[in-house]
Length: 404
Image (cartoon, rainbow, N blue to C red):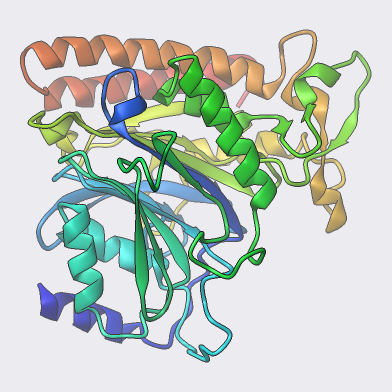
């Protein structure tokens, strides 16, 4: 395994891969979720809007991964494997010391690809980092959950890392950790995403108080939130009958939002086949939540994947609908401004409103499958058939509401 890691990392020692502009992420301990299962949430912001999901076979484990559609190397931006190990990242802009002149950078996607193929636990990931030659070519917060209940973040630069444990009362007094684009162990008041950090933290605190730290909350609320903590603005309260352009600067949702992944882990001793990767592919307000399981084998819903460097159809749908949301996108500064009525409106026909209803239906149907499987065992055939149903229903949804 050591030789595999070293060979792979050396092959990319001076190549740079864009890891994205910004992200809002969280790791939630099973101690504070209603069912005791840990959660991983990544709201991805990137300048590569075409994302898709692929199924891969690594040296030790099979895995599902969110990748850039045009990436032939299939570097990973979030994923889960057959051992119940799940990983994501957010770029950190304050963890690399000023004295570090390393040229090698942006290898986060490669690190996560290696991890999904070979790691089963948080300990495995630490050992993998210790095995790899330095500099690692990363500046990131890697969020991880595993099948043993492990949950937390590795804050990593080219030469060192620090782990923050979501199960620790010291590291995570609220039972969860949030990371945007700075590291707690990095230089104070440097980096980015402090306002998004505050917004996400408050959203999760409110959900915890309501007993609602669930995949549904993350998929239908947090990742399409129109709240901004510092200004105390909630754009859903500014709906009017008149088309209104508002600023999305420093919101979790933004022009560069490109996909969301929510991974629900398993309980101790529960089969890892039950670990579920939810994905809202593409621009989240226009997308719908799709459940995925590594245990279903190489089968995936056709809408969320594509061969080679082709784009996923669901992502294409969302990007087409996104065009109506940002009428000023041709100007750089115009990307901060959204047509609010395209997202939410009094007629309940905004993108967020329409997709939220369908998301909740899909989540309810998935829960029914879960309840059946947990009484017996995970059924790959039923999962594959469920994919076919979802594929048809999602296509019908976009045809009915958007004529796509």
